[in-house]
Image 1 (tube, helix red, strand yellow):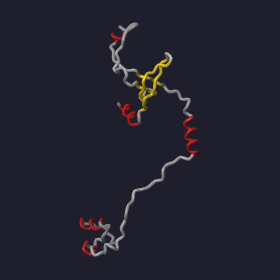
Image 2: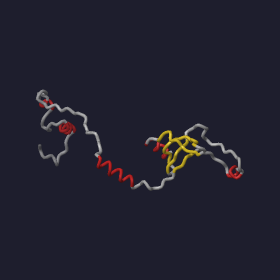
Image 3: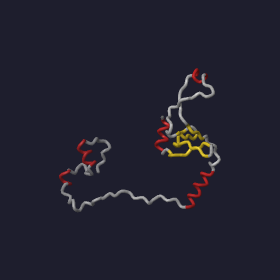
Image 4: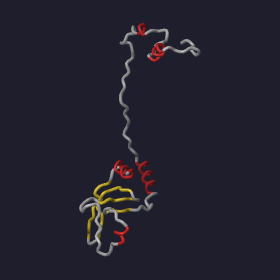
Length: 148
């Protein structure tokens, strides 16, 4: 190829270069190439082996997680919410009823460190209250709750 540092290429020359032709070669000259002799390239999707952890890797991951077992988390069950004015709160007394936004039978919010992670329901066993977890929020649902 010629040294063209001091020259500018015309649009036609650029087009020829992009199409793999030398600037002194025309498309008509190249069109005589036998298509049967041209190498055909076929593309196939990449195939990856399944990602499987061996027992040693699983044990290492488990031991890393065990380091966090004693980290305290705040676990909260939310029956419902409501807004009241200061006067309404000061007027509350024994026997007062506070109406919540949730209706009876609606799932309760289960929060860990203030973030909603699951839904549940109240159960009573031998006069003790408990919560039965009905469902864990998936990653997308948790992200939507954080952003809202």
